[in-house]
Amino acid sequence: MIPQLRSPRLGQHAASGLIQHNDSQAWEQLNVQPFAFQHLLSNHPLLSIERLARLSERAFDRDHYKRYFKACELKVPRDVLMAQFRESIEQIAENGKWVALHYIDEMDPEFSDLFDLLLADVEEITRRPIRRQMTWGGLSVFLSAPGLAVPYHFDHETNFLMQIRGEKDVRLYPREFGTLTAPEIEDFYRHNPVAGIYRDDLAHAGKAWTLRPGIGVHHPPLAPHRIQNGKNVSVSLSLYYTMPEMEERGHVYQANYCMRKLGLRPRAPGESAFSDGMKIKFMRALSTSHPRTHDELLYSGVSRLAAPFRWAKRLREARP
Image (cartoon, rainbow, N blue to C red; front, side, top):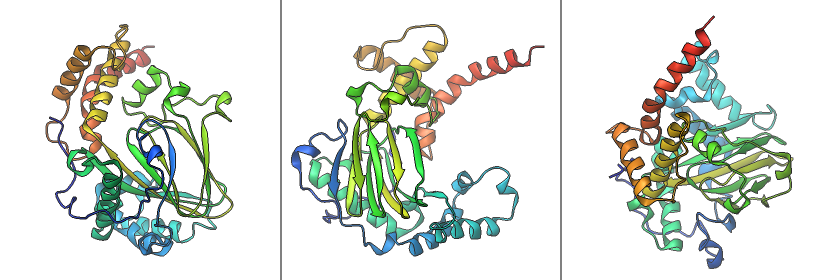
């Protein structure tokens, strides 16, 4: 059984209506097709730049704060980094930066409550007990200076990107476009977040939306996307979660990645239930038994399995 990483605090709130349910036909395409929806978060006090700047200091209560900085930047004192990070949010209109705050629901009880309320809304709309079944989930907020672009990439999770301030153009590529190859997905699941390879013929393909305050778009898992911010400061909130079947699919791709490295031609996920089941059991056996983070849950097994390939590569590179 795949462990759940969320706090038992979740599940105490009923639906709030913060996520609107105006198109039942669109929501039937959850995790298959992208679609736009409406929300009521554009004037939410927790999501003002001032409040998010204060929240940024809570990121330093966790070890993962180091992810926000380059190795050379981490040489300065922690309190200096904290002040610089907060300033980068407060001055987002002038500094030309893109700033992300991850796991904000774990930083502050108010954001944890917001996370629970939003999940309750999705449960109400989809009629699925997501909070009880999901393995992991969270909230991230993205702040961007005018005109910045987010490169082509894809994600593991079910995602709902909601625009709070400013505008951005989002272009998504559903699965039927065939933009991703099996090696790209396998490379992603060996823990390479930029495994997607952009092609020029994708410039006008896919489905596009302009997100304004009060509008969101659903990103299905493994749906590549590109984002271009508008002329003003952009603030977006991302609600995301993973379900057990998504973790299992990732384990199949991980096993296939290693098999392909050995010169084998593995079966694609879904071709054989027996083959998939064996790969899932194998990857679970290699994974950390008591993961503390989602990265440990999803990637610890493939990291152990891929270690011999990394050592072999280093030995080849070390040859005179």
